[in-house]
Image (cartoon, rainbow, N blue to C red; front, side):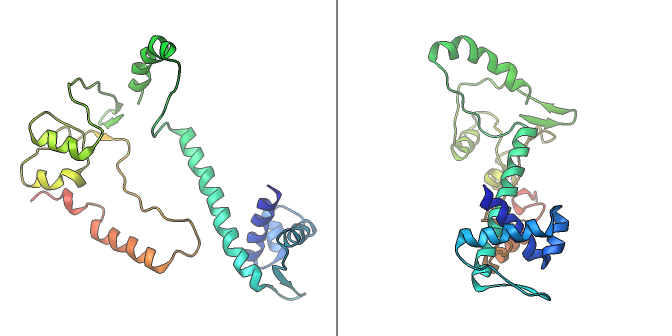
Length: 219
């Protein structure tokens, strides 16, 4: 844990290009910042910074180490952000384990009320809908085939059934109601230096799909 904090201090010193400025930004004394960098150098077994009275620069080892520090600090910040989002709003898959008897007698009866508190956003806010039926599928493609066969209605992403809607084989209903999550994300390792091939591909997809993707266009 100490090395992680020292790495954060080291990254701030590199960004500020000054022990004094970094210390001021961190709310620490200059001597403490300098001591933490020295302890970090001892820990990794290499000199990370060239120190002179006029300038501060990275050694070769410091340049390599700094890249990893930046990634780790970003990972830490992203982890904190992810946790804060989970704590602020319930989302995602929840798995509950219990004994069969307790689950049947006490957990299962409580699920309906819990689920009723969360699902779709409508004109008047969040609502939940209890959907009866004799068919349950956990695959969107199979669900789309079932709907196309006339089984009933389903909540499906338009990137799967957009073509069928455009062709008139399916019809959108209850369009004013949308699920809580409906975003598409590009996931890659967090870093200050995103490879050009990754950035260019993401930009290309953004340009191709746009704010209103082509599969949502109705002729």
